[in-house]
Amino acid sequence: MAVELEDKEMTLVEHLDELRTRLIRALLAVAVGTAAAWSWSGEFLSWLARPAGGLVFLAPTEAFFTRFKVAMLGGFLLALPVVLHQVWAFTARALGEKVRRSISLILPLSYVLFLLGVALAVVLVVPNAMRFLVAYGSAEVRPLLSVAAYMEFVTTLALAFGLVFQLPLVLLLLERLGIVTKERLAAKRRAVYFAGFVSAAMLTPGPDVISQVALAVPIVVLFELSLLAMRRSV
Image (cartoon, rainbow, N blue to C red):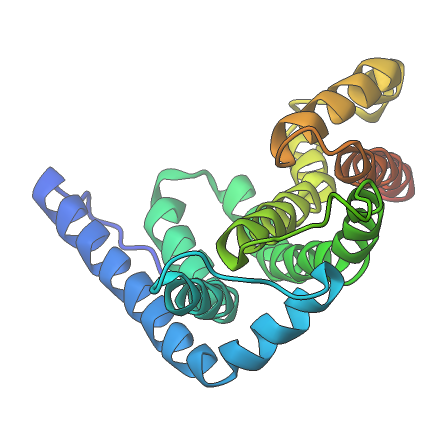
């Protein structure tokens, strides 16, 4: 994602005008992605609902708006490279050459890792979490899940995993900038593990222990992989 930088200093008005242009481009990309995702949002919603064993909607508009949110989520994932490029193009001018070079290398990998995190949450974590949670029901206490509540649960987990999968890139960037070192990170391993479990508890919806553990474990694994990558890069 190369960005051409102008030599002249920009005025505040020019900065605001560029910000508006970047925002419009990003929003248009999301809108186009949402329109493209709408055609398969119904099938995707049905596929997502399988671990729940069927869903209901409690208001006349709930099913429609939930499907629209699914289309928006798909559109955001499709448009994310464009959104990242617009954010990068706007902020790159204020960064030093070393930072620009480092970020330009990790942006494509950041998108791939985000998708991997979302996929792990949707394909593996959500079905297992639902089986565990629904098992607490009985013949007299049966689940009746609304489509809006269930999709909020799935979306929160998917975005949380997508963000957590950025951890290696963040640590590698901080190490390259000299803000942290692999020795200091290794010495703070226990504190990082504790912070990982606390972060997982904050990022996952409700008191679901299974989801919290499922998010905390990748944090620990990604942290160790980051340390390994730092050692290999020496």
